[in-house]
Length: 199
Image (cartoon, rainbow, N blue to C red):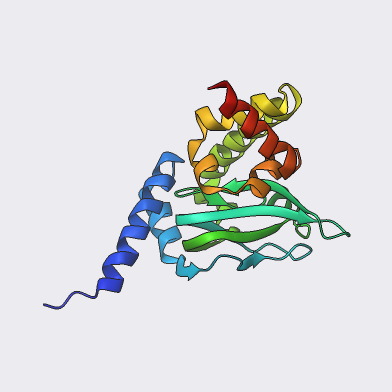
């Protein structure tokens, strides 16, 4: 019997997403229905999954790679809202809940394997438990991020990433890290130099 290697790869992607759905409290029938509506694809660095100013229709489960949500100002400045890594679900909560156009753009930072999921699924009755779990996670994360930005100096923010999110420091460049921390790339370079001298 010949087994299609692409089918095996797709099954592995679905299995990873199924595990995440299970942790959100979905029952097996809801998980199965969700998996049936997934579309699997590869995306290259720089690809745009959702343009700023468009309506958001899909969420993305990251099998591998890195995505980001960012806002481009009138001057073209790139303000990073968030970065998303392997086995995270990426979508904009405010746009989803309000139905308004996206204030942020979702882009591929590092070549990614993705599962695309229609956001309309999250409004289905069988997704109620998962929806509450996602909203709870997002509220906690939002509070933690506010504390991260308001209660810490830039040096403390960078030290936090080193200690608690080493993959960020490893995978993101100075421009991306600086944007998230809230300082300029030049300031981040100076901060890194100062810290390396202290070691």
